[in-house]
Length: 189
Image (tube, rainbow, N blue to C red):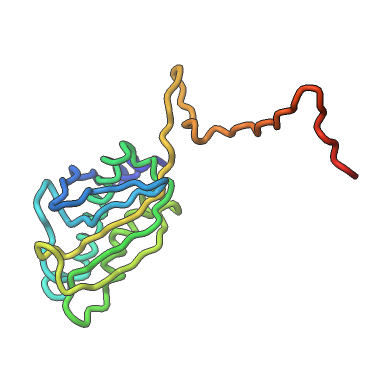
């Protein structure tokens, strides 16, 4: 199932991608890896879910915040790649939870993001993850997430058909040039 169809089946839509709030870019592609800068729980441009999970917010509210943050991450992925189906697999998710001292439920909070990726991408959405509790996050948001995805090459349209990009077309091995008047040496037995 395609990623956009999976989102629709879940009753979800991607928020508009937010412009960076500082001297950085929202995404950077290096080779076949796309790095997504830390995203927060924004909806229609407004910050949601502020405060410390475990004091101001319940674990369930933190879970919902992590899910919203992942939608914002995917919005940046789509803005960078043009299509969520170019994600070959999710490699890594790094999540920060604004939490009071001694809070030990950060993995449960970040499951909101991880379970969403599994629902959208299946096994390709299973990723390495760190769930870190921190004393504070920018603007007192509850959750911040950054991620790394592996990217498929774009498909190129030719004559009404989709074909793999030239980088994916296998090349023949070049033959060794032979000088005129000489034969290549035969291998010894």
